[in-house]
Amino acid sequence: MTAWTLCIDFGTAYSKAAAAPDGAWARFDPAAVRPLMIGAHEPHGNAFLLDSAIFVDDARILFGRAAIARADALAGRKRMALKSFKTLLSVSDLDRALNTNAPLSIDPHRLFQMRDLIVLYLAYLLEAVARASAADPLLAEASRVSLRYAAPAWRSGDGAGMHQSIVRLFGEAEAFRQAAGKKLTAAEGLAISAVRTLLPKVMESARPLDMGLIFEATAAAAYTSVGLDDGGSHFIVVDMGAGTTDIAAIARVGSRMIELPDARVTLKQAGDFIDQIIANRVLDGAKWARSTEQKTELWTLLMRQMRDIKESVFEDGKAVLRHQGRTIAISLRDIEKDKDFRAFYKSLVDAYVHALTATRGDAAMRGQREVQAIPVGGGAAAPFIRELIKKKAAKQTPRVVPRPATPDWAHDRAFEGNLAPVFPQLAISIGGALAPDAMLAARGGFSPAAAGQTGIGAERD
Amino acid sequence: MRAAAKAKAKNPKGSRKKGAARKRAAPAVSLAAPLAEAAWAEADAALAQALVEADEARSAKDEGARAAALDMLLLSLARAARRRGMTRIGEIGARESYDAKRHNLIDSGARAPKTVRVAARGVSRAGQVLAKPRVVRARKARVA
Image (cartoon, rainbow over all chains, first blue to last red; front, side, top):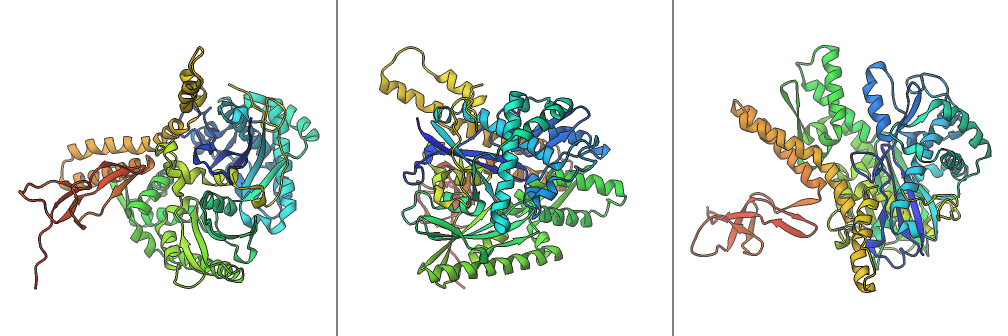
């Protein structure tokens, strides 16, 4: 019986979870890392990803992939699934944001506040984590499991208060999960009438869930440096997600990891902004799309295929797509010429230089010779981010060592080449599970994991 | 649950030697298969797209349409390969010292060449070479 650490990465588009046995940091064995199949109850797709979405239908509440499918089917009626919880959970006045009513497009019945919907989604996530833990042959035997969640470093602006709000939300979600059980992951979701009866009751008696907080940048530093004899002391992490580009720096001081607040920069432009630039460039070039209807149709197609388009543009230099018998091409060069992109890139360079100067300064002060630079998130594949890191790795001391988005150990034979392709998506949860307690931004206690004791209940399917 | 089902199917029944049982139990805790399934789930759509574009290329009525279909076929295949963790070896047109172990020489000649030019990149996955780069004899650079 081994004790395990489980980290939840509450992502903008997908949630992920991974576990590692206690002591994995000191005696690292790549094969012991366990990404969890939290999306395995869904019929198709990647079993390690859980769609971050909840949809309020006529009489039921749907979660995950079912929520997205139903929202897509009703898009013409201006109905939307609630997504991007992460953005909401990161606002400075969280309690106020949670106490607002959900918009009409999300909750046409006007029954729920944002807090209710987030608690319901977290309950769904915790149930998916519990099912995945129970199905994992190693984790199901755990003597105990300590929980963590990953969050961007800039949240530490009002630090402890924010963490308390989040663990309270998780506590309410866990209480609801205990009451609703397996129904949470059923494809048909939950009846609104049942939720309205159950939710107020469980929220009254809920207690904060015992879990730690790890900064995403620290998690990146952890998976980058784990198992290395000289894992480095200073890390600068460039994380371009969907909504924000976060640059953060972490320094190892003794056995502890500290965040360097002076190096912390957040840009409000990120992946979604690049999506808009690409879509606008295509629309500008599509002279045949004259009517609003044609333009809307093309925009919708572009947004639906944007992940593939961006991947091809970043990795192969161009993307080509078909629309109504026409082929449309967009190249990286087209994007780089864009005025908005150039303005974003300038801000990115300024932000990186600012963060790097602060990180180098701290490293020099502590007598260190190196700063490791790690690209993470969807932007890790962007050539302009890789170029920026490479270009600024000047021959000054402390020198910058660019690190790959996927660490060498992810290519370990134990995974037979299958972890590396999906590693970037699971990276933060894996790093969060591997990091020792000393790296945590806020501590949690332990949640017994054995069958039904609380926390993550272990229950075989 | 997929992993649980697989683990159960592979779980040996009856008493066996402890060492042997441990060896057989290893695949049950390995995540390689579900991770591969996840990578395939990511690659499937791109591969399907490539097949459709292959038909488009074959039935194209003019060179422009064929070129566009081939472009899309290549991009879709590249995406599928990336999502399965494949990487390309070499750069098209690059001159390299010939090594029979690393290169697939596609022209005939009595003697092995000293220098070759990469005509088509190779493919590797998890450190294993799946296809060697195809190379041709490099012509000597002309002296001005």
